[in-house]
Length: 201
Image (cartoon, rainbow, N blue to C red; front, side, top):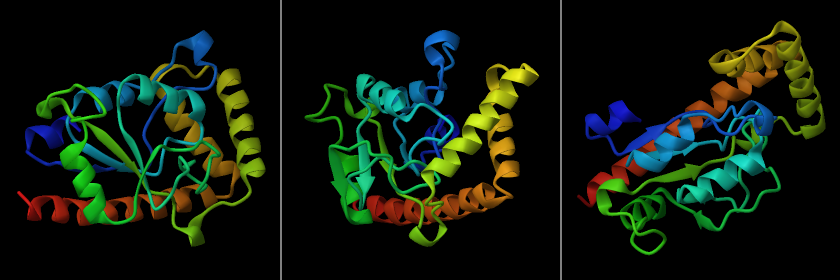
């Protein structure tokens, strides 16, 4: 995001943002992604936050930081591998053009931030055909990965890559395939939003 801002790039795509880790009330493990979203004026297209995180608390921190979270063709905060988390979003857009319009106007009423500080996150669910629909099974994989990380003494920045790798192993590679699919989908949407945004410069 920092590099994109320095290069004058207004839209950035990623798979899922970082956020508040499970058990953060004890570990205080909260991703710097949330701070950057609050301070770097670049629109981020993502499939919500990584499923290994505490999604309700992540969304709460985003709200606290004044980051507008916009659902793309959804009212639900995506859960990375799944299209729905059960967490409702206030804002929704249906087209890249609408998302670009939100980029232009975010901050004028929702926050008191000047134009140079405006920020927003557009959440696009994983494509339906790539969704891992069994949320209970994914949660079981994540729980097992968390136990393995604790037993191995994994801490700090090493936690996220360890958990993602372990979940991929436990799922037989299905979560990795889903991760690639949602990243391609997000990059495609980000390109469409960027074209629409630039067309009105």
